[in-house]
Amino acid sequence: MSTIKAVIKLFLFLNLCLFTIFSQSVVYLLFRNSKFFFVVPTFFHRTTKKIFGISIEVRGEKTAEKNVIYVSNHVSDMDIPVLGSLLPVSFISKAEVRNWPVFGQLAVIAKTVFIARTRDAVTKCIIDIDNALEENGALILFPEGTSTDGSNVIPFKSSLYELFLNEKLKNKLVVQPITITLTHTDGKAIKTTEDRNIYAYYGDIEMGEHIWRLAKSKGAKLTVDFLHSHKAADFNNRKEFAAQCHQDISDKLQENLRTSLAFKNKVA
Image 1 (tube, helix red, strand yellow):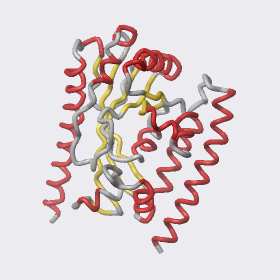
Image 2 (cartoon, helix red, strand yellow; image 1 turned 135 degrees about the horizontal axis):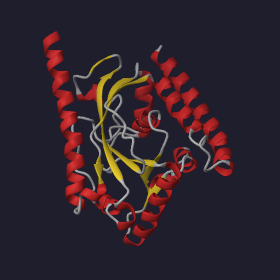
Image 3 (cartoon, helix red, strand yellow; image 1 turned 135 degrees about the vertical axis):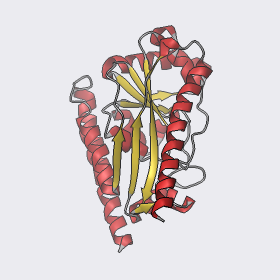
């Protein structure tokens, strides 16, 4: 039965992707700067969550500031619909994603800012980020540069924070850390790595294997914590800025995991 349900989920998701590519391509060409630009992407993200049975508990408050970059730990490709369903903004992504089949096209038409890992690309990156903030007011970044199993937060790539401290951005930019905590998969609290790997997508796991495993399951539950925001102008050093955001996110993740473990032990 789980196999049949998984096939149905994947069929629905494929059609959702095709619908989104068609409809958002029209919006991208005709209404790029419209306030309705994110209606279709938000629909895509929320529907993806429903198809795969992903539920979220949101804690904390989103900053009221404009010109915000949200930075979050990264557990799975499904973190994108998780955060995209809460924040109608674009993402910052590595340049290679642009060429991925289907997902690359979805990223392009959602006004993703693609970051190339070369010195020559720095100036263009700053301009692209500044333009995106002017258009949308906010962006989302996963500064680990890769995904993990969700049990810890690996060090952030501080080179990205060098962009944030550029004079063009520094005096207007606010960075708000977000912690994503995976608490349940397949209808039960996480106890093992295998439980985590139903949602987590990292390392040598193949994307097809990952999506199939998630589709066969009952989904996942996560908490999303919006943490205290920081003004870029308060930092002069990219490593200190990155380390502060890393510490904020990591401390909250470990607090959540300890609380979850204590609860499970008490129930047991």
